[in-house]
Length: 226
Image (cartoon, rainbow, N blue to C red; front, top):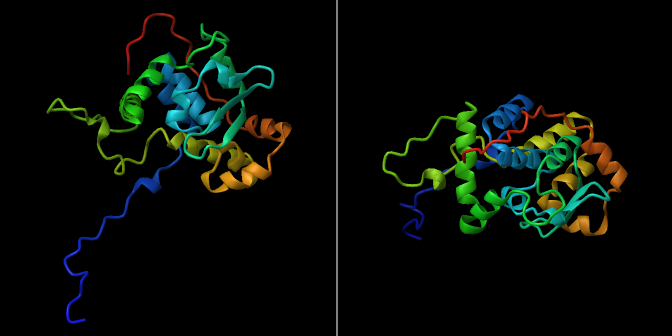
């Protein structure tokens, strides 16, 4: 060939999205301090189950299995049927909510936001919580436009980092790779999960090894949105 057909093609910059880091325990506790009651539950669920933002927002009380002490739900991304033991700290939070065992979404406001605009609005709300906690810089919104849809690749923190925190916490506690992936519902292992499952005792033992997060006292008064 006399000419190189690739000349003039602009190379795509390498995404930084895969460089997100897990939240340290102290950072999660700062997030809980900055969040309202509903978002505290979202954050606790994200950490203690590794569930993705959309899955957490759409959890209902029907997903809470009080007989087994598990959260049973279907992961949107992988279609995997998840049965994750509810950590003690998360159960303590759930039992303080007035809607316990009455049906409907566990996080009604976040569920509505997700149904209206998928993860975009919720990601923006979580970013503002991180900013309030001093983990990221506050975004300026001079033009009045919704900045929640800005590219997140330049920021190492996001709700998804709670998923990394779960896996990191399990491995730091000596939990094996198989159990850690089973609890997190790792995408690459979705097929093998159909044929092999860890028993409930092993999963419960792994969850119980996670660090106990200090949760601020529940606020009974009307709270503002993040």
